[in-house]
Length: 275
Image (tube, rainbow, N blue to C red; front, top):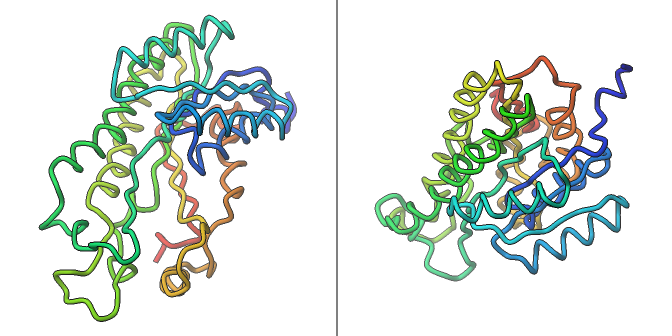
């Protein structure tokens, strides 16, 4: 097999949670461009259908959208059964879904602070980001192990390796106890996914299931200029990522190009975590 052939995902079926989101859609494009069949799972079916249609139109590859609440084990099993019935196989799981609540401009910004952070929001964020990844891995990983192999890719973050620099989110004129911050759950969830990666990589290694993580840095999505200036000053490459720059890494980690790699966390952050 040639080097380039090892990057092929020809006819491999990949389930991507949070598939209607910005990076989830890009992961789907990456799978399809490498010859695979992406299945976009999202709680918002209209959004998932829209993104699946766009991926299919851009790549010419069949793409399926399903509404799935990944905090519900029964819903995961039912959706997965539909995937197997339609395609007869599943080869890849990309655990991408996560809550990332944003501070609305002009709104109450103090809700994000640790002292004020609601338990209900903690529970919701953990349910999607950690429990959802666990349940999907439990259901789909068990299938991959039984069939003799497959890939699980967990999407972490540079904030799964380092702590948020809360200076990035400061707003002029607000007292310290009113300043917005990156919520505690985001970093905790992303750290947890790296731990889950390591655990699963040894658990199913003999059965041929490889499990790795990808930790992206930030992506340009029309952030305010003052935020961009602060953040890019912390990144040796001096910029955030383009939304397409993680696609090749996804293909590498999901394909035979990484066949002797498991339990690892690939960090793509422009060098931010090196400092």
